[in-house]
Amino acid sequence: MTPIAKPTAGSTLLTPNDHTLVMIDFQSQMAFATHSIDAITLRSNAGLVASAAAGFQVPTILTTVAEKSFSGPMFEEVTAPFPGQALLDRTSMNTWEDAGVIDRINAIGKPRIVLAGLWTSVCIVGPALSALDQGFEVYVIADASGDISTEAHNRAMERMVQAGARPITALQYLLELQRDWARTETYDMTTGIAKKFGGGYGLGITYAKTMFNAHEG
Image 1 (cartoon, rainbow, N blue to C red):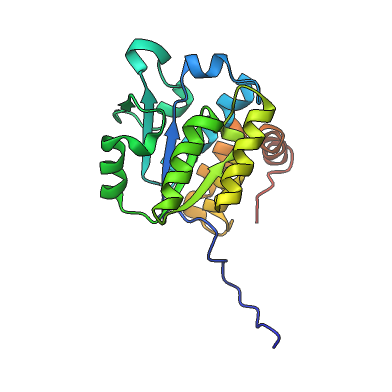
Image 2: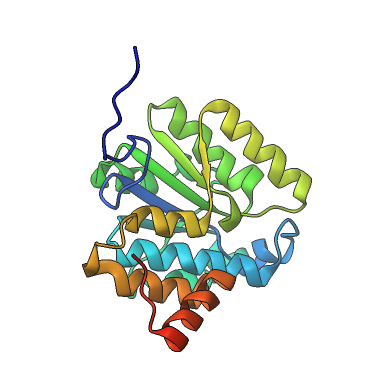
């Protein structure tokens, strides 16, 4: 039987109110050894994700590991969109084994978990597999995560995808939350984030608006 097409979004697309974003260990010590993605791109993509989540009011957990004693402060690009928000510091490499984080996950009460952080093979694989095991849907922002080598990052992504996680990218995350340029209340915010963090796409928006006063949609 031929299916009937409807002008509605697919059920696996993210919306601002259906998930919790967890940003993990975007810290100096972790970044020093990250080689699957360059530091400038990593910081930009992490900033894009954090700004998108803050702008769309997505419940967001910022968590660090051994912040004071070893790993250092979280990237300013990640913390700045959430002024005054406390960072949940852990001793466990697997965020999902930290009681404070889990208390916050349960208090927020969303069925989907979106993850980004360092390193992919340890600090992202751990909570991804654990959350999947407990019945959550899991999305991993692949280019806002990184590892000590491309091999390590890719194998970690494959392992999570094989277990049922859905890989996405930073810019995809922003545009999926907007999804319709007719949503004028978030249009300027979305294009503003893209101009700041969106690389070539952001430059294109700046050019089109400056030269032709062009408008998406």
